[in-house]
Image (cartoon, rainbow, N blue to C red; front, side, top):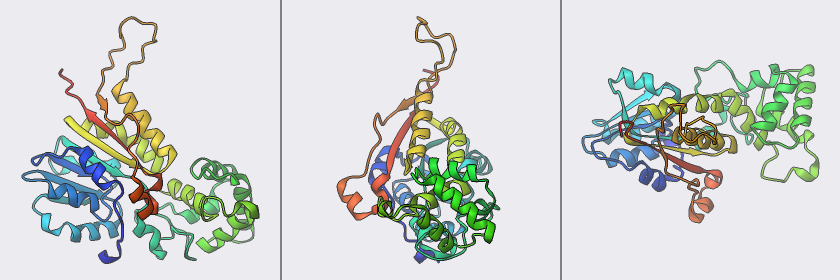
Length: 316
């Protein structure tokens, strides 16, 4: 139900300002969620247009209701932002004036027990943002080799006890499949020394995050999409991306820097001969962070970072 899609948009004012919205422009919200950012974009449009994309059916329903008064200028499509070009082609749109990505899991997804995202409930392991997907958290936990489990828990979760957790998951599933969030919680808890369990919140937080990222291919999708999203921008168009994880932020930072300065010539060369031209400029030298008031009022905002890229006129 839409009323249950309780999600507070992070860095809302900063993102809207960063998009530099033109009333007659065309914009894309690639992670529509509950429609918080989109509502603010739509309110600033005159003859412009907004395309909202989300892979989560519940988000589509919730955002549809929230944006009901803007139906003349908003189109909502159920898809993944990696398919943005295909979605726009389908709508007859060749280029856009701005795009927003608010990455990570929504408050609604965490709070809905049946989605299997949260360590706070004992429910079947799932964690799919798109219920049409085939890979679930249960598949990962029960079928990935120990070294693969160790890699994702260490890299995506930045978990110090990743080796212990991976080893104990494999041991537990040899007895019986690990099927619920509660069972996984117990394995994780037993893998972390008592003195470390209180560090940085709930002991399962980092492992659940890692499995969710793997289940939804979040880093892969981001890495594979950025160049194409920049290509879709009109001159002066902006791409605003909010990340919540150091690996996400690194991918965005690297892609934006490469788009600004793609030259591969050795620094000793007096002139560029590779022919690779800048596609624009990074607006945010350092990422924009939430203010103190937002951080204290919305725990999810604490790790948020906003980076902005502006497309240049390639004919200049």
